[in-house]
Every structure is written in C-alpha cells, then in structure tokens.
Amino acid sequence: MSDKELLEKLKNIVTPYVQDKEGLENFDENTDFLNDLKINSANLVDVVLDVEDEFNIEIDNDSMNDMLSVLDAKKIIQLKLAGK
Amino acid sequence: MIGNDIVDFNTAALQSNWQRRGFLEKLFTKNEQSLILNSEFPERRLWLLWAMKEATYKAHQRRFKLFRSFNPKQLNCEIIDAENNSVLGKVQNQDFSYYTQTYIGEDYLHCIASQFQQKKTVQKILSHSTDIKQELILAVSALKKLPLAKISIKKDGNFIPYLTFDGFAINCDFSISHHGIFSAFVLSLTQS
Image 1 (cartoon, each protein chain N blue to C red):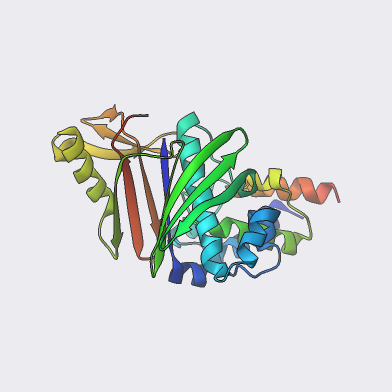
Image 2: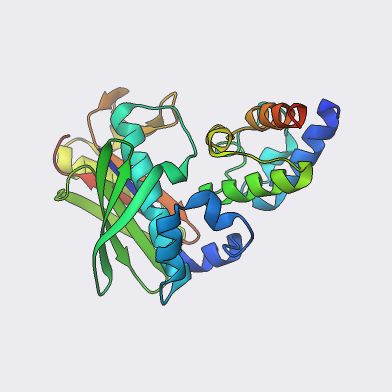
C-alpha cells in the first residue's frame, strides 16, 4: 500500500471523531490527533478499533500507547502489516 | 500534583458507542469491566472509571513531566466509597497510587485526582460558553495576589499547561478539562 493510500484511509477513519474540522484541511503526517484535530481522548480508542478493522491488524496496548499522531499511526500500521 | 476530568453525559452518549466490540476491552481491566457490567447504571459507571483514569493520567504526567501516552489499562481503578453524588476512588498506576474524588451530577461528572487523599482545592464548573481559562486566571490572581492582566496560560513541550506572570512561570498546581457544554478547573491551595 502506498503512503498516499494509507494516509487517505487514515483520514477517512479519523474524520467522524474530529472536533476541529479546520485541522483536516492540512491533514498530513505531522497532524496531531489531539492538538490539531481535537479528537476527544475517549474517541482515541475508536480510532484504534477502526484502524484494526480497516487494515485487518491487531493493535496491542503498547502500540496504542503511542498512537497520538498521523505519523505514529502510519508507522504502527506499516509495522503490523509487514508482520502479517 | 493534581488532575481533573469532566464528562458531559449527553455528549458522551453521542460521541461514543461503548457497546461496540472491543471498546471496553481496550480501555478497562477485567475487574473494571465487571464493575461496569454489574452496575445498575453501566454507562455512568463507565464514565466514572474513565474520568478517574483521565484525571489520574494528568496528575501523573504533570508530577513526572512525562511525554503524552495513551494506555488506560495501565491505570487500575478501585471504588473505595460511594454515597449519594460523591465517589471516592483509588487509581493504581504501576507503583504509584492516586486518590480520586468524583462528583456525579444529573448531566455531568467531575473527577479530581491527586496523590493525596485530602487535598485543599478551589474548583469551578461552568456550562455553555463561559471562558474557563479566564475564570482560572481570576482565581489565581486572587490566590497569589497578582494583577490579573499579566497572568496567562501557556503549554510546555509535553503539552502540559502552566501559568505565567509577566512572562515568568508561576509555581501553581492546576488542571482544566472541557467536554460538551461543560468545562471545569481545579486549583490546588497547597504546593506539592
């Protein structure tokens, strides 16, 4: 999967939880889930569950611990996909 | 140090589907899951435990100036005493214990966590569009006897907020939380 495809999928996943829609306009690797998109912390778990479903991977607690930005999520998804 | 968390029940019901597959398992330990599922009001119980974890996370992060993280299952909640609208809890984070005091209202709950069971604080809960930061600045100005106009709130490299007076950091233990139509601050009256 290309980076562009992965980012596109990730953007679709986070969109329903975004409180600051302006943050979506500049969505890229540097986008932070909490500071830029203002995703409520209780919804971080929904992002994790949706990523699991979309990519058919399992995100363990240690990986979830670090999934706070687009770049973090991308790295974790790529790692898990490579390990399948 | 101190941490707080406010949950707007109506907003929580709209934002989260707690019954979705995996939701409880990712956020709560087995013991907490049974506290939720065996409760007469499982949704309220869930948000109580969530707020206890959030408030404790903030207190702990501030205490040790840590990077951000998201590992709710590392925090183990226990309910020590519950009466009427007030719940005393204990949260264990690895080797560190925190105490939580939660007020449960009709439309929201507000939780305060600290490593001390008795902590003297000022707190304020607001609804709708009132500016909670300005309210906090007013309280700090009164507490520290400093002119209002020179106090402001900044964030450090770990996104932890701190207060400044005339550009210099003030040693002040506080926490702010927003959710839905509610916002709250808690300000410690003792240094820690």
